[in-house]
Length: 63
Image (cartoon, rainbow, N blue to C red; front, side):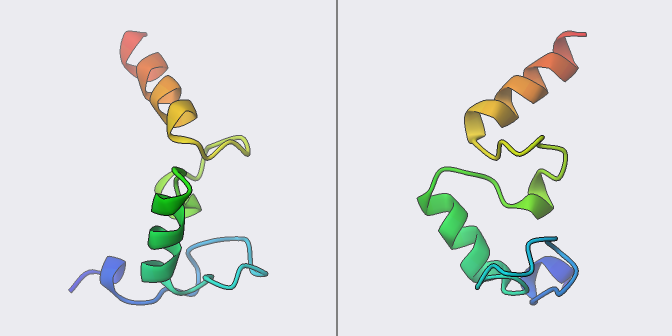
């Protein structure tokens, strides 16, 4: 299987997070907080909200 399903140690720069290296718990936490994990949206300028993600996508496709 791909690396998505196993725990990865190099996925997130936030080493102090209790979910660092535990992809399943990380994604569940971000789903509950309506935000995206770093591994899915690394170029976020600090804003991991879905609203910001959609704004970035909209800008890429409108140009």
